[in-house]
Length: 500
Image 1 (cartoon, rainbow, N blue to C red):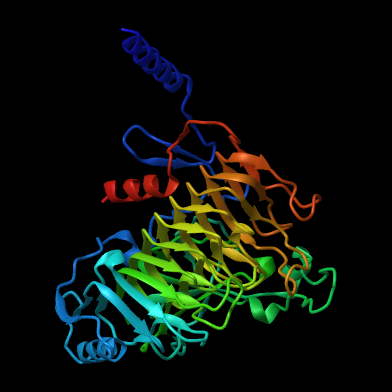
Image 2 (image 1 turned 90 degrees about the vertical axis):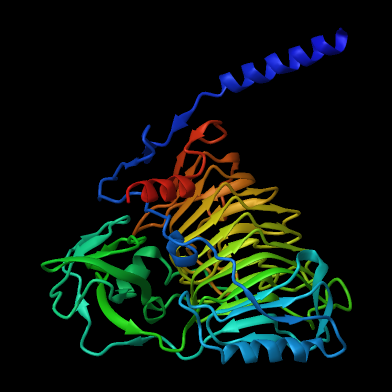
């Protein structure tokens, strides 16, 4: 009888506690009863951008299950057998969905003295979960699995045209150009935002307090290139698939568009269900494998159910020309390196339109991080970090358009002017959005000019950051339960798909 009373008391308490949490919505975006969203513009017309078109095929396609074509079992020469299977598969014609097939690594341990290379489209490298262990042996710094195409992005001659609007707001998916002649729906374009001396001067990034190795920002290093697709043309008005994530202002050089090719870039490549480890000689050793998985010059791929232990840098490192990659349910722990700059970036993104979802990290420094001049949109969603040694967030030198959604950490999340940290990190970026995150402390500041950063529904302590006099970001609902929608990314994805 007493036990029944206790259970009833606990049930009533839980119900009452649940009812005491009053749902609330952000002033920046509200959720309607039909699942649609309303956005509130600021004085310049900027809104929170739509982050839903990230990841594999912009979230429009489910990650497929690709049939096994080659199977490899553990052996004394397994590294050679794996590479041979991949190389043979690379010569196979892709099917109607763009896949050549999967190489299955049966359960067991595989010693890799060099690295596994994938340089052709349509290949999946798959294990049998934790039972398939890849060990990066030896004392060479390298990625264990290196996925990369070739060549570089090439501007198509005589296609560049000026954006005619004096101000293109954040969140915009259209703008006027001097001439739309020669453009068609489906064209792949670069939205080009030039770096200017005035912009750097107004950001005060030419006046970083100097110490050994400090480099003041140079305009020529900040010519930003956002990859987009033309979805509609109305006269000289161009519509694009993904939004503007950094305001284009005439006083800072405005913007331009041009068409491009990237012939050597590969696609439809995936790494699945592998346990990756690196050999090491001590807890602070660095003469061993750096990344478990590295992607560059690739679009529309995924990395799923991959674990990484004992690497110096990352489980997953997406380089600048990795685009539309989904990183799903991966984990990174027990890094082996000294604990200082340039190490332990568990999930590092330098590319565009990438999605990290359901990942976990332990013992890292910058666990969910973007690097210099990372162009969005990009999303980190529903990820955790424990035993952190530094902070989560954009790391340095101006990332634009990143959503940190339901990130939970026992450490810090920071968006600020980092000043002369490193070689002169300065302002980390703009249109950086924290949504319903939990952290021990957080700093969210907005740059002197050219946009805002946002902290909505944070559970944690507000920190003044490196410099207390920097402009505060847009803070709302700190330590307030009940934010709706719980996930901005998921709400935006649902709203977009419901609008079809």
